[in-house]
Amino acid sequence: MSSLTLGLPSTVLVGKTMPKKLFYEFLATTAAVKDEFVRLIERIDMVASIKEETLHIPASGEVNEIDVLGLYLRVGDRAGAEAPYAAIDLIAKSVSSKVLFVCETDDAVKLLVRRDRLYETAWLPCDETTVELRGSTLVELWDSLSSQVVFGNSEPGDFAGRVERKNRIEELQGELVSINKKRKSEKQIAKRNALFDRARAIKQELARLEAGA
Image (cartoon, rainbow, N blue to C red):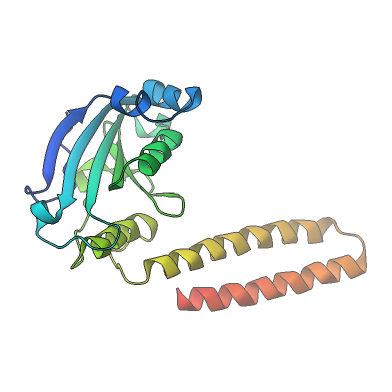
């Protein structure tokens, strides 16, 4: 069992290993997802359970419990580690609690949460990775934990709005790259000018979005 605690208080720590079969045999899954459980995950640990009884902040809205689930990966080094995204997505969609996922190798961790989609951090050193429990309710705490994964800060405010801006920025940045490639190869002046106009409009929208981020 992992000794990883992420700096969490002792009142929320569980430290219990869970049989992998509980996940891939009793949840509606596919052969490909089951393969991720078997091939990529060595062990699953319940690291912590954050709820009203363990942290003494009230549940509210749709958040009654936040679990921290450790997935110890079979590959023992960061360079070759492959995160089991499909398995993580299945768990997140299938359980009633919110889940902070911790993919762990011998020397590194990757944190993941599922909101409108899966979000992840880069690989981080095990002994330097901590999370902050910030919020006056479990809803705020969940937004704060999610913000630490998505944005690298613990700010819980307007999480949905910030995610929407982030996704739109990434979408526009991808479109801008595609347009710039097309402009280089486009021979018709009218089409090249139209691409230039679209690129300028994208840059203006990006400037507005980034100013409000």
